[in-house]
Image (cartoon, rainbow, N blue to C red; front, side, top):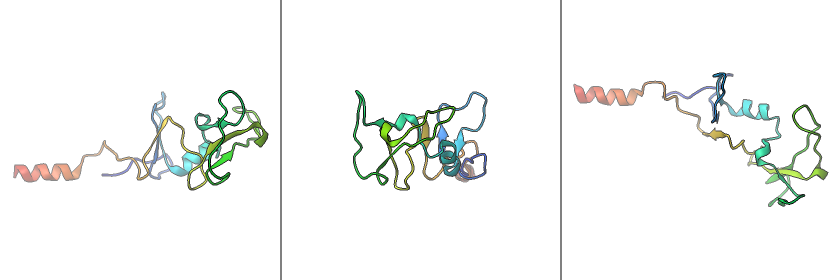
Length: 127
């Protein structure tokens, strides 16, 4: 069986589970996913060392976790280390995916294609 592809042609490892209302491809490869996220990750994984729900990170900074630093744009305000927002990172130093994404490290199987092994076994049973 083949693997589902990202729009760039690479094997898709991330799937936006809710899907898109316009019918566009909800599958993306590792490279495109992290380019889209601009290395900030998703706010659903952010924690803060200040406030009522303060949580201190465990482990080593820039190995297990890192501060979210952002210059500010139309989506997020400027964020500095002093603001105290942080996130855990994986072994490659990347933020973990948004909770709305399913992840398949080996890529998603294309279930729309016929399963040649299944049909071959059916054919043998009939003959």
